[in-house]
Length: 389
Image 1: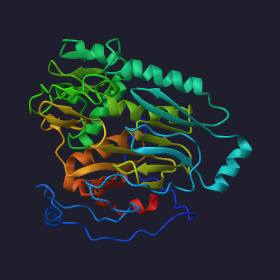
Image 2: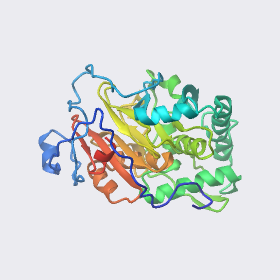
Image 3: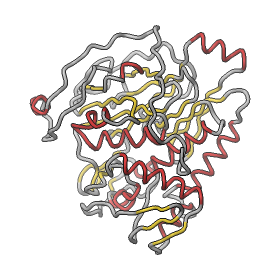
């Protein structure tokens, strides 16, 4: 573990086992080829996919409307995700583990708004929801790009090309630099100017349903460096730490003992060995219960946080290579890793990579498993996904 953040490195921890109740064996399907993709009517996104297994309760083409689907029968709690989350917050544990925990204290699910999204935490009797709320509020004041008084906004407004950072900002930008390297540059906070240029210049609740003016040009994001606490960047470079900050905050909340499980906008970190969450398909209909145990899971989706511009539809997942919303046949990607900040970065990179996203994920030792939903509703996963599903 280095000074830049907890949990980064080669994580090959033992994966939690399946729960016998409600588990259905998944049927193997052949790996789709680029030709198969074209026959399904896909765009010209050639490239191999990893070895896959069918992992969703059913497959449904993109043009089909939502239909009702049974909810998981082993879920506990009453929290629900927002329309912009890709995880339905119905936490679950093995009944025997639940009973053992209740002898020591009752676990409670709390939901509140912070960091521009819905936050859910699971606490035991010794953990305080007030302390958790204060912690998330402090992180929002530090890393929000919508608050002109935040540390990040002040950094973005600083005209200096070299800036000495405070310890917390240096820590999270060190994480961001590491994840940029791991993902081949596909996860980069320097997309801030492009995100603004495509109309995402306010809290999403304010822009949803409105038509925005797109002023961004198609160009790669600027290159920046960090050495210890020294940030070097061309000016102007606008940093957007949204996803990284949410995942990092969930990691800290769990690692520092503030919560057993923490999630922010679909980035989940758990310290409970039998923790389960329900993934929601891109149509908010079918669900898939996943055991993440002591680990993390995140989903990136281009069907959420979408808006209309004078240049057409846009979404928040910017490809740093082009400065434009990612053009990919993948509707959503989910990654299971050791930490939430890693899961958030992995899911985003898989989605932006498109047709070869799963093949790339299979080669990454820090990604335990991954799942993608394609534009036509077909679902594929890495082989390791069956351990979780």
